[in-house]
Length: 85
Image (cartoon, rainbow, N blue to C red; front, side, top):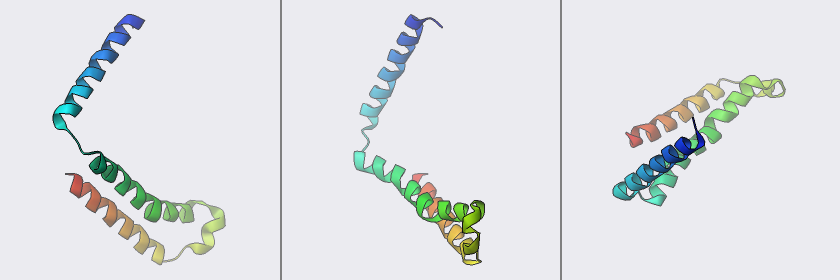
C-alpha cells in the first residue's frame, strides 16, 4: 500500500474513533476500573499458581490449596467479565 493511502486510512480511522468516543462519552474512571479489575485479579490469583506449576524452584509450594486459589481467581475474573456484559 502506498504511504499516502495508509495516511488517509489512518486519518479516517482516527476520526471515526474520536467521533465514536465523543458520542459514547465514556467515564475515564469507569474505563480504568474495567481494565484494572481483571488485571489485578490475574496478578493476585492466577499468575502465582501458574508460576508454582511451571517454575521448578517453586515445586515445593504445590498443594491442594493451589486449586482453591486458582478457582477463586477464575471466579473473580468471571464476575468481572459478567459485569462487562
